[in-house]
Image 1 (cartoon, rainbow, N blue to C red):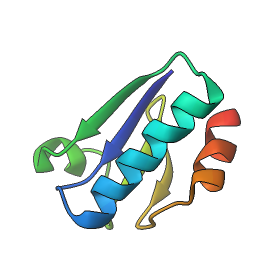
Image 2 (image 1 turned 45 degrees about the horizontal axis):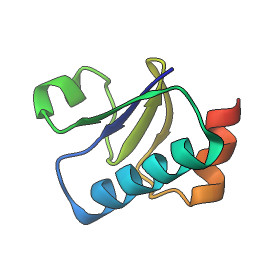
Image 3 (image 1 turned 120 degrees about the vertical axis):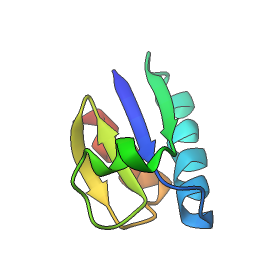
Length: 77
């Protein structure tokens, strides 16, 4: 599983990365976690608001700082 947190380094982007990191640990997932801050790469996803969460190249959330429970639910799907 490849998980990307898209964000330019704002507080919400950093918070989402930490939350996703915790969820991966809690669920004991074998996943690669990537923090994507390159604006040109972020623009390739065609999203208008950050932070965004991408799981296996599918955008599952954009523009929201998710709770730990929300992230865990998305990762289980």
